[in-house]
Length: 314
Length: 224
Image 1 (spheres, rainbow over the protein chains, first blue to last red):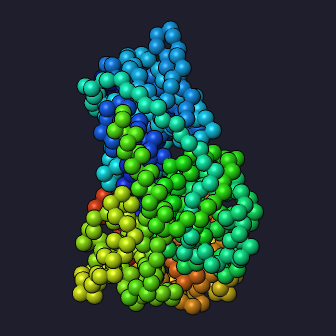
Image 2 (image 1 turned 90 degrees about the horizontal axis):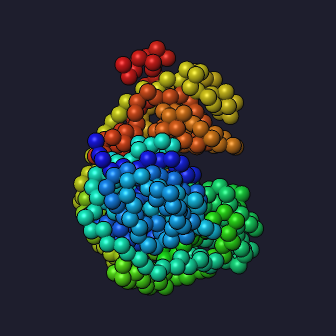
Image 3 (image 1 turned 120 degrees about the vertical axis):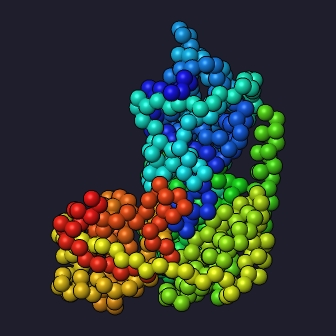
């Protein structure tokens, strides 16, 4: 038995283990999964001296309340998150993007994400988790990954296999920028939509619906009219694809998406904006802005350079 | 042959093999899929073959559209590995406990239950693709007189193992999932098993499937 572990006092709404995800499995129907907001996932690991591909705890809206037992360990929280740390009789408010040291009996209470969706809790060490296809990412729809593919539950105990010997406290000044314009590349069925529908897509605001999760983000707003066919022969999907079913309301495929779909694709979110897209909470307004492929590639390169810079400064 | 290659977003290639759905076009898709999978091009991280399209996803940190397109255009899929397919018999129980949409099918198709089963069972179906949910096979083609549209309102929960029909296709729900296909029966076989990492899918693109009817008793005793 491991002598270092976490007890889940309150699991939170949708709390899972995530890492880099799993690839080469679309053809059998298994999506990437992995941390929704990749940049915040990487920073969380770096702040506690982990390998960058280590598993972290991802939570949405309300996070977990956990009690730690064992030898001293560092932890960090990333995202835009309100949380507290309880040590014996004192409770302090935690700050994101800073690592803290906790010891036997201390508690971390992740109260909520702030005007965003996902946050990350990393521990300086290695969770004792089952890997499936080289990833412990939990896909709750297919019950794949660690924890039998299920979200974390009340009363559960999570063991740590290893604690990092490097316990340096780290800190970075990162601010999650919020964006209203999501850049998109024209989809393969763009011409299925009426001129009016295309105009609406690029000029009007949409609202993120409550019916959004790790599989997809549903949008509400003016209807996008299809003039060709509201179904296509089912074909592959990737994350970021914006499908418009017959009701005219766009759905954006996210990390746990179905791998095949039969609705026309009006656009695809540029990779550069994916991390920020997933953080848009229900009620947020979205506007799409068209960019071409080469701009999308350049913007992603810059985004990736910025991520590497951020990591190298920690 | 690939008729056209375009980009699907900034991290995937959209290879279009045509608009029809038939075995010969789909076999081309599968041939490309298997060739590319075998060759392991640096940066390609996923392949999704479907009826008449192949989507090739790549890691934008490692490669880009131009490189992958150039690579795919110069592949020789003709002299590659043959399709190497299996023939599988799938037991299916069409007892009223399972055939939730038999009444609906009888009405839409204007055929009796017996006739529907006779048309469906003991025939060879080709697996065009797997996916949507893990391991779900898309099988075809059903006889012309067996083609029904999806339910107007999809079910929130379709039971695991359900064998269902829509248009010219049949499929099997590998685990409980939402779905709108017409349910005809249920198989006791595990069509997807995530504990078998190297071969989680029982049925793969290119395979041939024949449904064989079993009784409710045989169904109940199947896994014992």
